[in-house]
Image (cartoon, rainbow, N blue to C red; front, side, top):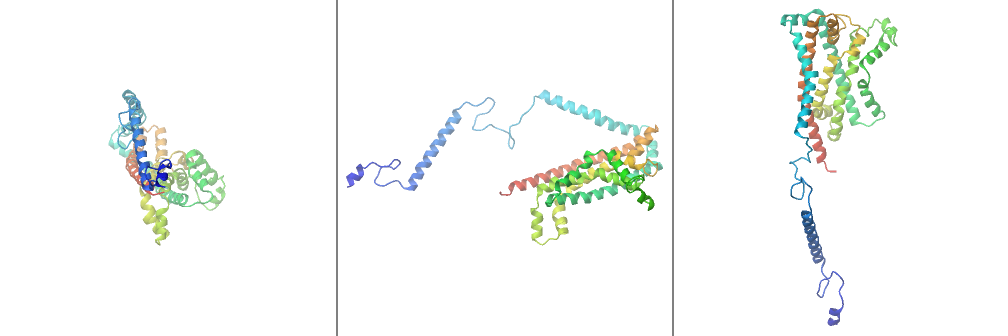
Length: 350
């Protein structure tokens, strides 16, 4: 019987011997086959011809942490840089230098007299008042709108996003005319305002309303992308730990958005102080009462008082430069904050 069993043909894959191979031995055989196949495939890849420009090795060599970089010839880079610098010099640096040159052209005494005359001081005061009222109002609206859009789902969410962008698509002059049609003497509430001795158009309230309208998207639009990237996990954890709504906002949400919030406030303030179109429609150009700094510059320039016009314009230009420096510093902070949020999201296991 032993002779017959030895003579019986064995199934394929079973090694010679009296018993079939164990599962362990079969696994070793398959592993050895896979290893040999992998080595042969790598040898074939090494032997295959490589495209020109790719160094030897299994993969193209790139700089650490970067993908394949596409660079232009040196002369193209120099031409592009030269065009950019020329454009910035002609349309930015030269006009800015001209403003300060013309402002101090007749001396420091004339400059100080131009910015300290009663009409100029009134314009500066009104500009600061409009900004001091509109920026906090937009701060509250921007935080509330960003919180609602990023933390909750509700009907009309897309409509709210569209309305936030409305001042970007509507001309400031049209916005001013809207307020005239609503609050003017011939407007919807004109008779009621007149009967109660209230004045909106051609007065400070109208200027504040126009400034609020043209500046309210800035803070909300800075906060919404960041808060969407952060998600709601931290707020949910704070709620589970027993935090109230105000505690959750002050201790969790606000520290995470503080730099983006400050960035939006700076942009909002710069636009509020430099707004011309909407304010021009609702102000009435009353000297010493309803003229802001941009309107005062227009009036004195049209009267050929160039030194006075450039003196007040230099104040707005200086504000723009300060805003630019603060914007750059805070923008770096915001970029780092968004990158940190993105890294945390990437590390969360799916």
